Image 1 (spheres, one colour):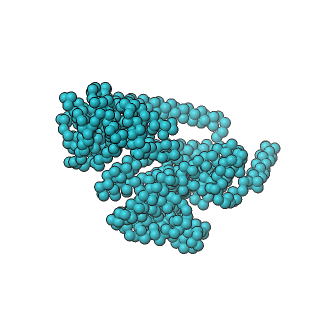
Image 2 (spheres, rainbow, N blue to C red):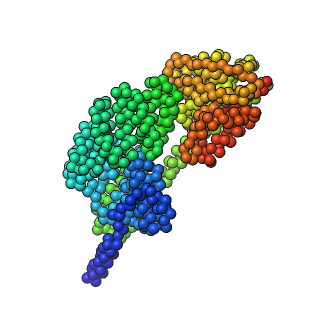
Image 3 (tube, rainbow, N blue to C red):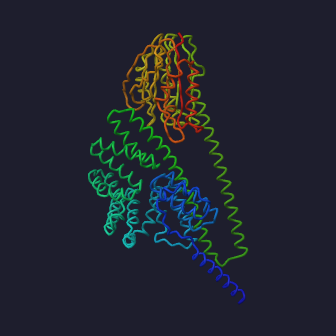
Length: 629
């Protein structure tokens, strides 16, 4: 027995010596890299090593509060190289930074929670002790809406957070407690801890003061509709906010200022700061700022009856809300999964405490039982997943078939007209629609529309529109839109809207009316010029009893009409540049001698080249009508 104890103590000594040597030869994280961002190309060209992993980590972390895409790119490269060289000391630093960028800029709270939980475990494995080890996890729970869990962790932190911040001369800790309360809409507590952060700031020189508590105070008083007080805090801390050079804080401050001016009815200032924050948000991929600023710009332009601008920002905010709503559903699912894992872990820990002295066969049977249990759970989950996936696929196929059934089976046959059409959805079920209605051979109605969003909901709007059109007599185009708007409004599909234009083609002229659609292009063969015809009008289903404008144009031999949705002119290339309406107009002008199908082929070939192989993010629809006689 004594011999075995001697061997045990010897092994402990060897392990301790190895650990001590590792500490002595550990990586030096205190090195400072000057102008780290300017060195990006040099860092990327380095041979893979621990140094390269460290420099990439420093580079990625410098973007954590400034540019989400750049931060994630460099941090993931650092993680890849660190894994290659088993560089364990840097793992928690990389994962903490990934947690921050996913939480603050990408609004991906489940990913943030994953990385921060991973970083906490890695620190424990390395023997690194934090004053508040659950601080980042607490913030993640707050943003995920798990208020009970957040409060539980806050109770551990609140008693000492002010003293720790004051002692460490760092107002961030107590300020982030204020931010958690702001996220949970507990305004009084958010004010209390943000003011405590400003107390810590007073003990610091100007260059070391943190500006974000002023942003939190501004946001809280904005929610309380005390706009002047909100502006007062933002402007009081603006020099610190700008000096910190954190794009996240600067953009949130500008959004707050824009909303304050909106509340004070100062629209020019509100537009200025909303546009500023929107452009900065796009640059740094900050989803919260993009959404808030685009929603505000929509409200302002809608009040000012600038419907084109309002519609633009409505589309942007709606698309982003859909994206974030999907992400929130994923967050909820991940949160449930995490809770289940935590409960299982707690259960396993309790069993371990009870059975610490039980070894051998008992442990063997526990392992066998656990494997069997998790295997069965896996089989059950996989079975449920397959059933759910089959159900969704069947529903999606039914919706797709319904959408296709809404489109005309054949194009109208007319000796005077050469007609071609094209539609390409961005998802399985798109929101674009085109149709034709012939009135006793005397007039042809050409319809082109774009429902809000994509998927089953937009398919419903297309169905309602087609049914409404089938029930309306041959009338002027603007009267048709007026009646159809009331039909859509009476059905009340919530926030769903339908943009639509209607063209009535007679012998040598056409009439046009539009509800929130892009321009119609009229190629005039006699002059070889293209007229861009844009009619202002709200999409269908928004306001009852809206009246629409009607325009008339001559339609002579060789003339061409091009109707389209916004998917083509607003298609982005790989660097995010829009195809643009002027490029489209010029292309139509250059191909005016072609047939209707030839015009369609030229336009699609051009936009596909512009997309550079990527999938079109929005539906693309074209209707081309050429006068033959």
